[in-house]
Image (tube, rainbow, N blue to C red; front, side, top):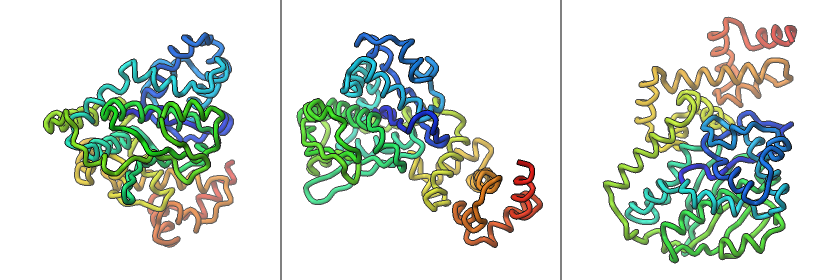
Length: 353
């Protein structure tokens, strides 16, 4: 459950967003289910235009478009519109979410479990935000991607929520009965399967992708509560997830890019994307021989080069995108780093191109 459940989607492979990446075993179970349904794996790989390594539980960063194509092509080739629902069940049966289930069951309350789950999900994703909100008697668990591909290609979102639903059902049993589910995209033409799977009404073209449930569930005390086990599993899963990912420093730089894109450059906002407090994050960066300030500076200049070289972007736009206080602050920092002003650097690289 603490994996990203296949949270990968984007336009066709010709429109790859290099920042739209996740890490983890997102296609676990896909090849097995596809062949069980009569599909030919070589045909799937050929049409999807990807390597078979993506179906073998690779932990490398995986571009959204690759996973998007695999799910779409697999569903079409075996003529199975509800392929992602079957895949969620397949992964669940394979024990893919077992660690997460044990972790959640050991929590004191469902609220504690689901907040912990959000923290671990953040450690697995680059670009997704998870929120838990309550309004009166109804609470919601929502996921925000910060990108429009979700509304154009819904299958990974459906896979995510199907896996989430199955895992919570395993933790709460019959007490888990969502009130409704909303999706930001249109009806994918297998609503009957989805309604039966989730056991509740589904709203399409909504403002958010979220599952709604009675607020009373948050205070429900889990029968398997074990504080020591819960803490131990929390530390274990966090270390496991991060040890499976690419270099920790590179992960942090990618997350800094995401924050800069929404106007945030402070370390506190970065910590919200990880299951660490600010102090722990600073300590871990120190252990890697770096610091937040150094990574912020490096990331800013890497982005600055991309935003300046061979483009028509005005300097004020670049400064604002990189979250500098003003153009003067950006120009001063840039000249201190490169030895020339942004204008001169841009002219030289435009001529070179």
